[in-house]
Length: 147
Image (tube, rainbow, N blue to C red; front, side, top):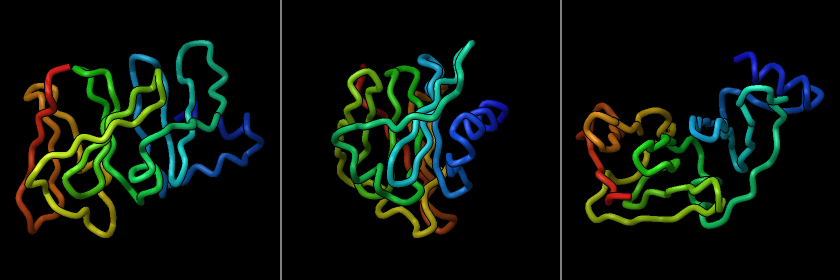
């Protein structure tokens, strides 16, 4: 949390970080991505100033512009993977800044109106993404193809 406070100070208190935003940490690159409608990136590595910058990406508008998507880091593929309803997940390569959509049949359906939040998570033990869309629906798992 200390790095967010420093980030707010570094941007003159105009960072606008609040509970409506979603976040995911890439522990390999030591980057925290935070966003709602656009993506901000924070370097959280040692000796960093933790300054917020806008991250421009391509191919991910359905996720970037969505409300409360599920975001998770996949350490086996070294990608951030996002889902916000439907049969498509999006993988973000932070090196190229490109989101790649991957569509699967028979997905869990639309996201709930209040958003996905952390109900989309990666299980390293099982090598799958898990989503529990609501208390009234089945749990779904998704295994991405090998890296």
